[in-house]
Image (cartoon, rainbow, N blue to C red; front, top):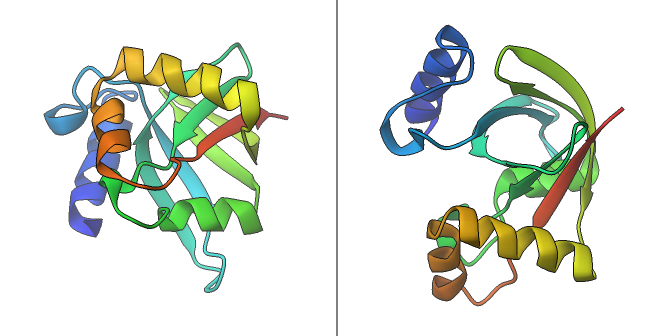
Length: 135
């Protein structure tokens, strides 16, 4: 996975946020975060939903695995992170959406990308919706 992520990150930066392969045509951002246990710097490419001019949502689908992705735990411990969107770098504060807010964003994501509905069908856990608010 690290080799694949490295290739996606390289292409993302070379093409101002556009990539081919499995992410082709999807909105993609790079999430820079700090390991909750290790303190190591991490970067993950991920699809997102733009909520408004200053907020984005990302989704802890983890390919329908039974556990949340590592980046989710990292954001819970260290919520002040940076994202790259296109050619912009933005400081954001991560928070987990809950209740009606989560349902609204999650329903929209499943409409935009039916793969997320498939992830939901294949797992027993609630997939986290994480809002990234610029500050």
